[in-house]
Length: 205
Image 1 (cartoon, one colour):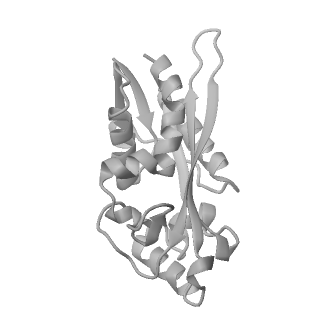
Image 2 (cartoon, rainbow, N blue to C red):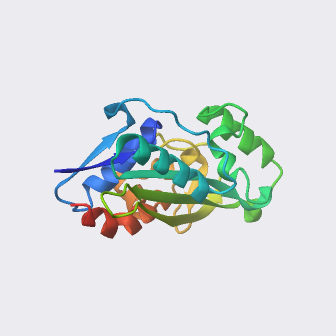
Image 3 (cartoon, rainbow, N blue to C red):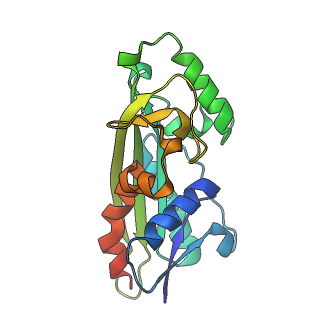
């Protein structure tokens, strides 16, 4: 049984990533999280792009553990805010991981923006770093997924996390937080990015 490390401490994201991989027919691959390995220093997320942040996290994890490591960085881009909060999505309110405060701040900033200008997209960059062995060098791969939609005026739904309750995907009337886990996985930015990594993950086994 081969192992791959999902390098995240976001509980909602870890469950989602594990669920995506578990449903993707990759036999012989065990998915573990950061709680399953000894702690190691983690570089702060200071990259200018989702790809930079994902790659730094995956590199740190692979170097510290010797395991193939997957990390993602994702966030919400809003047209009326010139693409923000972007890489600052998790700490838009000034505190990292305060979902409610982040969401309320964003809604306040869009309070006067008409419905036709509330376009947005979730973006995900997922990185896979496979440590080198013997004469083989380490390999690094970054893929992307995008989920377009719009921001509604108040939170709806109890599923998901982060900005899910105020994001309605294109072609839907429900927010991301009103979708079932299977529906979200099939369409989401993270689902699209992780599926792009599947051929490489299968090769690990």
